[in-house]
Image 1 (cartoon, rainbow, N blue to C red):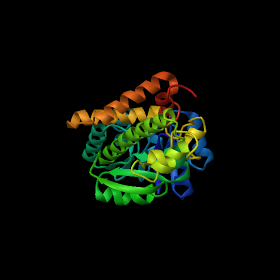
Image 2: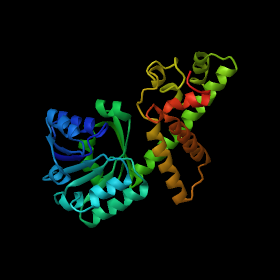
Image 3: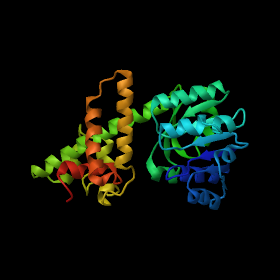
Image 4: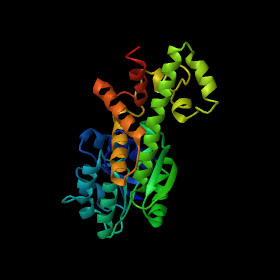
Length: 296
């Protein structure tokens, strides 16, 4: 397929590269010239504008920082809704607030476009390896059209329901993850104070009722999970700043929906404290250092 890709950053760049590897034609735009050059070196077309990226595209994919950018890139003057060919499938893989996702989808439908919100899980490593999880909101027909494209970038693709449900799934999942990481960090910090070896706690809890992904795949205490960021000075796979963004989106959605999320609110406050220490660029599992009590 001929694909236009807008947003070639840490996630979008590898995703676009995987589309090229799968045999698709990709024209990409990013505000950073280096990102456009990298796509061109990989065999794609480095477009100099949104309009140039989407010209003639059968599918348009965006990977942008937040809701305001998505609204502007799609609905602004000369944006995607103005410039994309009639009948193009629009896919936004940004992580944004649910209302923005639904608002842009409504605007796209009014212009005759089928649009999906398809945020991802898996981080930069998953983007590079083509193993991302896509949580997709939108029509059944649009999902069917998108599937071959998404399969070039991801391993697990789930249709979550109508427009906005992809974003809803993403923020609910990451709220659970953020809360879980704090709980695991508190458990391992307490174990140390009580004289219990981290490996012994891991051996017991990972096979017992405390088992969760934050422990068994991403243990925040160094040692028990060799591949975890805790053994690389918390070099980020998923930054604390990114977790904070998602927790704030979850709180925004909870307030709008009248949902009660006290642990989600507390998790957002704790990750804000971590970001305030200057550790926002570290992996989100570095919350363990703060809970444990400083850099050790």
